[in-house]
Amino acid sequence: MGWPSFARAAGSPDVSGTRIAAVVGQVIRPLMAANDIPGMAVGIVIDGRFQVLDFGLASVSPKNPVAANTLFEIGSISKVFTATLAAYAAQQGHLSLAGMASTAFPALRGTAFDEISLIDLGTYTPGGMPLQLPDGIDNKAQLIGYFRTWKPVYPPGTVRTYANPSIGLLGVITAAQLHADFSSLVQRQMFPAFGVLHGFMDVPADEMPNLAEGYEDDGTPIRMKEDVLGPETYGVRITAADLLRFLAINMGMIPIDPAWQRAVTATHTGYDRVPAGGMVQDLVWEQLALPVDLAALQSANSYSIILDPQRVTAMTPPAPPQAKVLLDKTGSTNGFGAYVAFIPADRTGVVLLANKDYPIPARVAAAYAILARLGAAGVVR
Image (cartoon, rainbow, N blue to C red; front, side):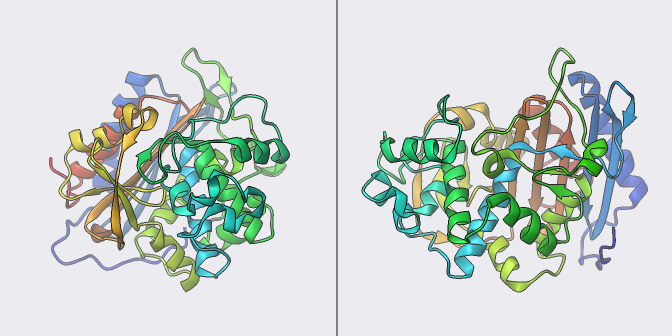
């Protein structure tokens, strides 16, 4: 992969590649069998060692195995890249995350967004946006028209409703302030800055053979269909190795341009406590204090947290990025299921990519089992 090696931290476990492969296999093979998952790629970083393991089929017909260059849809994990781009724009002085959305995006002046900050958008707290856009919004003009007439159900900053339009609008505003197309900013600026070699917003023709086929529960092949906010909310396709690299960058393990590193770190700022999930909402990332047990991690990633309004308590001032925490994010499309988690203090992380949208509790349990069996600090076995 061309990554540097890292010295083992004092007191950390000496985890061999053979040990990692054995543990991952013991968890992933039963997971795939129980959920009828055709293929998976699993990335692990622990004790300074990076390892990616491939399982099963990227395509059932024709039969193509998952391989190092297999691209997976990662669904809402894409939102983390959107948040990072917004944080970068703020670092460069193009916008203020604490500022009002209509200040950064004049088309929304005189609307509810005069009182809604970019942080509210990035933490799903603008006031009760729906999970998805209403039907019939097919272009940016219709999108802006929708936002101009949208009215909050709750006071901004008080209730978290997980919503694609919330993060999507953050991406739209960021791209406008950077005077470029959103997908181009990610593909041509962010990915090269991070050394991501096989990550795409629009998969080029010569990479299409590497794009895994997604599968519905009945085995029907399916891939994502873009909508007007698709790039900003679920549009990334990437290999497990490159997504693992992104986690390592989030832990400060791989040197990148300092401005981008500051942006990455800024997304770990804690803005709201979500008592129902026992977690802190960062800029898209979700954060849990250590030690964390499986029940707490699954609670923070429950379907209730995704689908139901949750009262929050704003952290004033916001909590600076923490090392002794676990940060994670789920992602799904109709044919793919993904999960990532990492512990900065432990320089430990896991990437799970699958070409089926299988239950989130099973993803979390698998990642947790891998971390616990490999002796990651901060998880309760």
